[in-house]
Image (cartoon, rainbow, N blue to C red; front, side, top):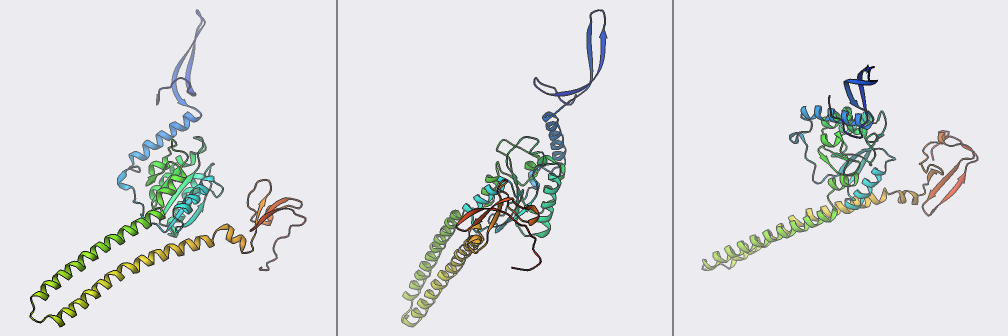
Length: 338
């Protein structure tokens, strides 16, 4: 037997049935036994885990380092997943300067693993991001099964981009977690793992500034002492001393400028990134005269007139409020641009 059943396990057996007529006893001689239901899935999980581990796909030596200060990250998940909103909310709070590209894919179902793998390959080919987050919310073993498929595991292992997995809850473990370069307990944890907090960056910049100022002060003090020593050794040092004092002042000015310029550039970059992110917010888009149309029942965004029907109910969201609308006519665009 490949495993020892315990009380409560659901199993399937192949057995030879014999009957002892004198005592009316029936005996089963087991020839094979296997798990069924979730037990069978778990057995498949263990077999694949053992296979990939023996190939070295879980080895620490092949794990890629995450970039400490990424500028653009990719998210591989479903556009309808609550996990996506959790990740975006965390990134906006911690690092609004980051750019985000979403590679949409179903995260549950028969084709989910293949499509997730294709999105990872697409992100690697397009080379638009510096790392990837692959995530979804919690669920049962069946719900998370796409992340236990060999197709997805090998796509993660073949990726040139570092990958952080944030699948399910803290107690959920999938094959994707073992192959990924970093595993986060939740989608929110994955976002925190890849995004250095803006406050932390500002503290590091301030520490660097203070350290550089201390180095500059020691350098200036050393040059001043050297100049003083040379001045005392001269019979008539006035002119030479004046030139050296000017040089010392120039060095001090250059050192201060060398620090101030990159420091100011970094602050300007942060402000510019924050302003761009604000311009791209949904609220700003509505304020520019656009509207968002949602199906009144499913609350899903309406992207095509093909999904609309006469007398259907929709909700129109504007910058200052919303309105419930009943359609009387649906007409596709005739090619005329707005």
